Length: 348
Length: 243
Image (cartoon, rainbow over all chains, first blue to last red; front, side):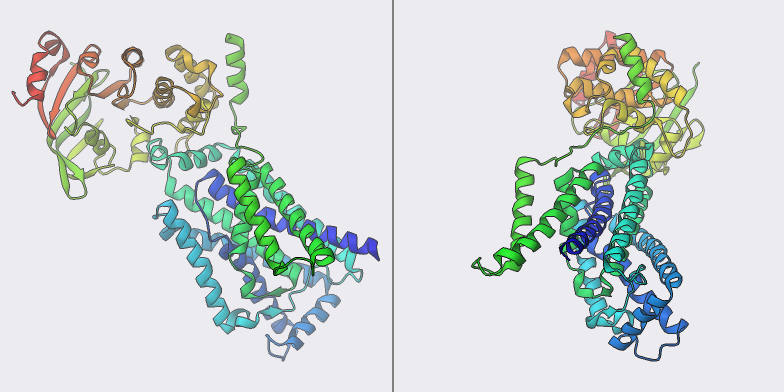
């Protein structure tokens, strides 16, 4: 029993690591490499979850002619039952949700880039923060999408048809970490190409970059689209893992986690994001165990604040003692490096 | 008689609604080092910005090799072979020297080969040997003079037809300033036309072919550099409104 609990804890940690990692990777692309301070990560993250919450229940309602109200617990239970009996359909619907999240995330990122990118960095940050909060309030009060304030359940895990819950969790964790690694490889390839240098040039001095012939507005729009698509993927993975989409889940904390990870790991260094995400999961999961096992009745304040306090202290410590993060930025591994090295060594 | 590369006709420009440049007409000859001098606030830098559509152009025309480029966005001007090195913030401090050169060279709009980059790099090393040993270093670790060299080298890597240098010696010691100006002669030897904007009249005059004097946003004097070299008081008089 203890063995199953430990494996389950590891699987859950790996899944959360993957979700944090994909979300932070997208922020690193935006802020670390391009200098776009996106404080609306929660919004783009929530898009993936809303896609799952809007699409999946409706497909089930139509395909299986479910008569119950889409928001009801009965309908959610029916969806789960059907998903258990239809493994292929369950998995295909998950893949469709993931693909839709990518497209919708990229679309929203690109659309929002038009008004947003005309703003200076600090105003851009505030605007995106506000967009995230307004969207949450809108989804909360609009019942037609994910049942408003109540949220919507019955979003079946793609491996729900497997009877052993530990195997199910392990499979989901493996899939999540695979998607995270694919995202990592894609972003690494992107930033280590000449395109990555353009991103850094925009971050350092946008006007100078334009004077070198770079279409900076278009590039920034593309970056927001790519990063938003990745954030939506993370949100979609989260929704299928939790099995429930609830608007008040998408508060500013997701944005803060992403910032904490990127600052902890190191700006413009994706390896740092791996370490940052792992550290956050270890602290987060570890604290849950410590709090629930030992500290529950022994500390004189509400324990739910403890995580927040520790994360805040950690952030202050990073900014004070290691402002460049665990892994500081390094030059890109682009072409011509070998040639340049050969040229300099032979002549010296 | 050498070919005219750039013509500016009756240019009125400024910022917002405020007009800084009044009726500027000039032409740059291919292969020359043309010099614009003038006191502070004479509109020299505004002129460089106007050439790149970074200032408001009220009227007038800018013609580069028979193409009207007046309203062309800056990124397109680069593709036409015009390159501006601004007075300040002209390098990417967090990128290495090599990255600074590469970011200018590789373009999504114009395909350039890796071989040509290496060839250009060899040229740059002959003009700026200091760069060679620090090619993989972040630019923020370099001295002011070396940064300026990187900014100019970055322009050369794309082999511009017209290189506009906005006060490249403004923050340098006289020794370094002289060294930079000598490099500009080397650049001219490569066949690049240079528009040099300077406050340091005496030093800049020594390398120039043709001189324009700006005062209060107007072109008040122009002529062959040789004339001013023998009669430098003409420029001094122009600075103090005695033209």
